[in-house]
Every structure is written in C-alpha cells, then in structure tokens.
Length: 186
Image 1 (cartoon, rainbow, N blue to C red):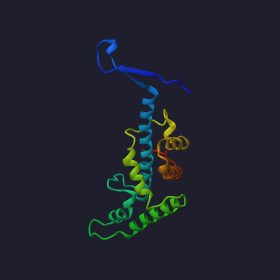
Image 2: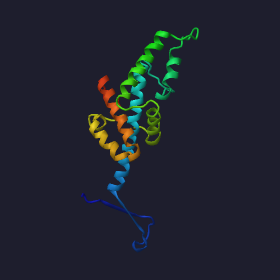
Image 3: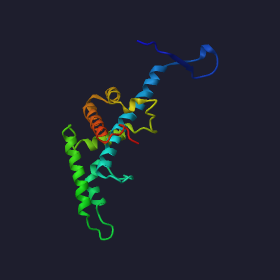
Image 4: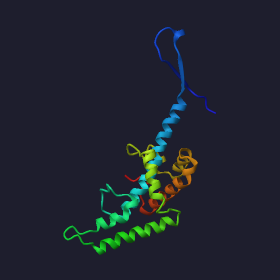
C-alpha cells in the first residue's frame, strides 16, 4: 500500500504551541478530486449516448436545444412540419420515425428500455454533470477506452445504479462502433 503524503496547516498565526494543526492527506484530496472528475465522466457517458441517439434520428440538425431522447416522438412531428402550411412532410416523418424505431429496436436487444433509460440518462447528467472541456484523447486515452471507462464507472457509481450505467456505456460503445467515431464525439 502506498504511503500517504501528509500536509498540514495552522488555522491561526502565532506561537507554535498555540497553533492548532489540521492534517490532510494529499492522496485523499486527490481521490476526492478524481471522484468528482470521474463523476463528470459518468455524466458525459450518458450525455454522449443521448447526443448520438438524437444525431442518428435527426441527421443534419446541429442545434438540438430542447431535444431529449424522452421527447423524440414529439420532436419528430415538430421537425417534419412544413413551415408554409403547417402540414406534415410524410416522407421526412416516415424516415425519422424509421431511424428512431430501428435504433431503439437495436438498443432494446442490448437491454435498453425506452421507458427507463432516457430518464435515467437525464438523472446521471443532472447528478454528475458533464466534462467542462474536451478531453485530449492523445494525452488521456481513458476517454476512448471502453475498458478504462468501465473501471471508472464501477469505481464511481453506487451499486444500485451500476447495472443501468454500465448498460448505457455498452450502448455508447456499440453506437461508436457503428458510426466509426470516438466514444466521446465532439
């Protein structure tokens, strides 16, 4: 077991014998910081999966504000509306609906449930947050390694959420293989 590095400081200047020492272990502080960073990675996994699903169903739409996996059926209707007369562009509607149903059918074979996992993804994103900046995959390849991400998820997520979180990671890995992009596509 590695030896912990000790750091201390006093909370009041003055005489040495009057100082009250507080001891902190650097490794404990680093662990807490890493857990916060790892938590953001967990949130990023859920976020990236949601973005991949939305990009698959709505190709060519770059601004997906207000779009969530939970509201895809409503957004399909909204996006397929013709602006001139308010009627539905049936060809566009059918194409998006088909992409959506094909993708969900594929993910359901992996264990993804449309009634549970979109809401669970939102929960993870809101709980853990997402990465503040784009990771450098050359210097930190962890963000593109399913094995390392799996270890990070296991170390970070409470046991009762672990199965569903690992399922989201598996779905992200599968979609990443299919579209030939990094796990965290920016």
